[in-house]
Image 1 (cartoon, one colour):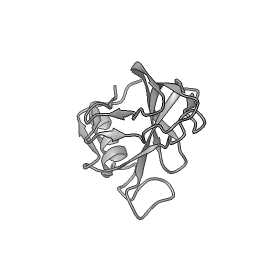
Image 2: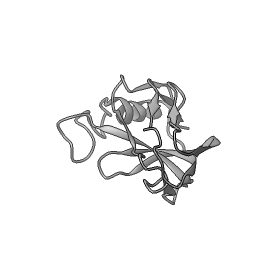
Image 3: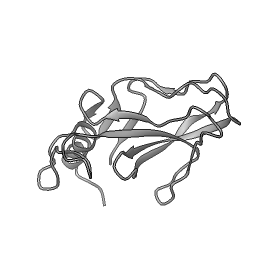
Image 4: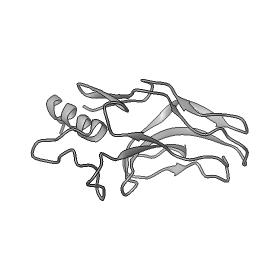
Length: 147
């Protein structure tokens, strides 16, 4: 079963740009945060998630300064066009200050409330992270497509 194109666009606008989704939800925000639109968190993984497993997120033992990057659920943070969404600005993780090192193989987008993994994608090329590396996704590099 597939979503209609109209619903794909409406869903992306709701999740990423805080727009009303008629008959399903409104722009008051994600769960547990009815006063603001909320944010989404971008995470890196050393073992890819799947549609049914959470994968393995990078740890601070591997990358001492690792932290998820937060992006606002707004049209400033995301562009919705038809059945696609993309990030409007670079998403830059902290510079790695040490740790055992690791290799990022996937990226995920999580709801801040409940930390539910919403979307994930294997990276086109694995990213070795060692001291001095600053992982980053340039503007319009994270593309989410519904179909």
